[in-house]
Length: 146
Image 1 (cartoon, rainbow, N blue to C red):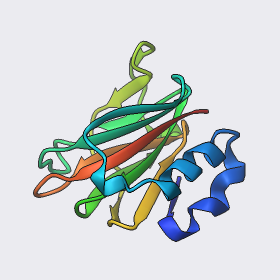
Image 2 (cartoon, one colour):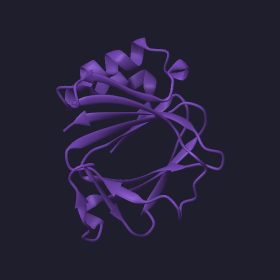
Image 3 (cartoon, rainbow, N blue to C red):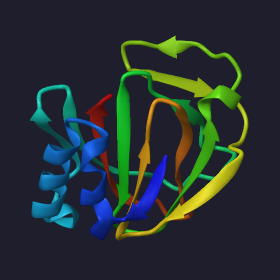
Image 4 (cartoon, rainbow, N blue to C red):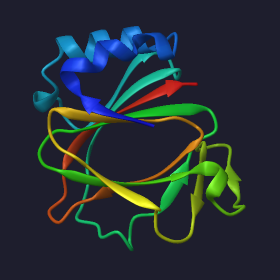
């Protein structure tokens, strides 16, 4: 897992062959003006998803992992709290291959505040519980083939 500010995003380009293309898009696009929906940057391998979440408590946020994709999550309209637990500390659960997601019961081990101007990267080994906000938030989620 990585937590940093957008001004440092380019420092992470070497972590995955598709990160450079994702970073170029994120740096050259007015993210706040993007409508809700998906933009394919490289087929299904690199997708930008703009979403608006509803208010969610820590108890309502489900821990999740992805086997095939890395998430780059960027809150735009407000602070988002994201839970984190290493995947190897999570119980066994059923993987949904079609949606590339496994949901887990219970709360995260720790919680991070991610404010506008920041990002979090979650790799397949990172359990995360995103979307915890009192008011909901507009955010960008970049799905990158791992």
